[in-house]
Length: 180
Length: 249
Image 1 (cartoon, rainbow over the protein chains, first blue to last red):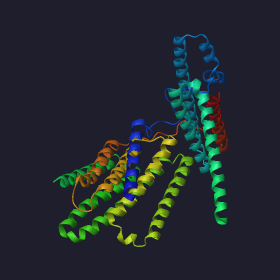
Image 2: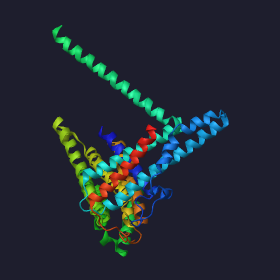
Image 3: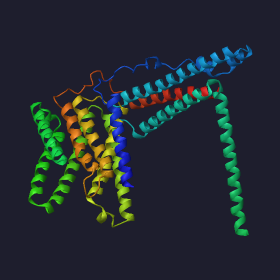
Image 4: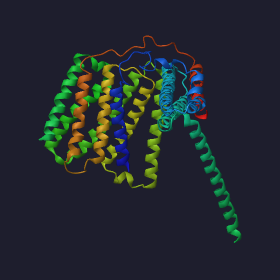
């Protein structure tokens, strides 16, 4: 058991150091360096209009009304590209927020350990959501994302309902068992 | 033959590294690191003498010096932490808490293992003990590197070399120790010995001459942590709101 744990620890350290060497995480960079390439535009969040437009079905319904298969295909492709750019930009913005936070917090003498862990967890969750969103857009397209989320919500509700029914049944069985 | 060439190469590289350290006055900047190299050099020569005198004594000398080296290795990790985070009290506090948590966890695990099987300590071989201690060391370095990377701590070339070399050495050792046989010489035995050569090569390249650690030239003035934290959380919540909106539309 300890052999396997050692192997995992060694492999993780090796990969981390290789990544650090390749990405220059431990580079001799001065403090307060500018944002990484591609993240310069992510200073501010995208306008709300854009999010409303990209993920809403209004435009799609209009295009579908034209009854031209070529335009529909082109529209879908373009929307997918714009949605992916938006996800990437949101992702870059989150990374920038964390970089700026790290830059400011590293010199703070009264840094709080639980708060830092909480912020890091939030960052990881957001990055995970961005990854899932990106994969969902690639697979289903931005227009079906709303319905996909609705479907997932319905599914989880159904699962929890089933679980409640199952628990109620199990409780009823448990109550009946001693009397039998 | 291969063991001999690895041994001689290590000696030559260690002498060369120490010579460069003295001539570049790096030895005064990184005393723990050069202390470790001097110790390993002295231990190699001492072990070879003991090996000629008495085969029986060799085993106990080997394991005593091996564990002393392991303790001195922890001193290198402490030196990396001390030098790199001298200007960053916030990150230093974070690193301390994480390392403390890991050591408490390792102690608790060892305690539970001993509690469930009191004969464990008597039955554990020196090789297994080294593997367990090196694993704890590897986990501590992983935590430290993660903290350095998360807080974008600027590293000088020399310190980066020490960390990369020592980290690589520990990673290779830990992997090799998972496979190395108790008796006999196979690939993993030679890989275990050669892992130190790789680290020495890296150290020689990175510690050829002294390089200044990037100073906190345009470091921001220390801001109130509560303000930093509130701003970050607000901005992260904004991003979360945007993502939620995209899914709900």
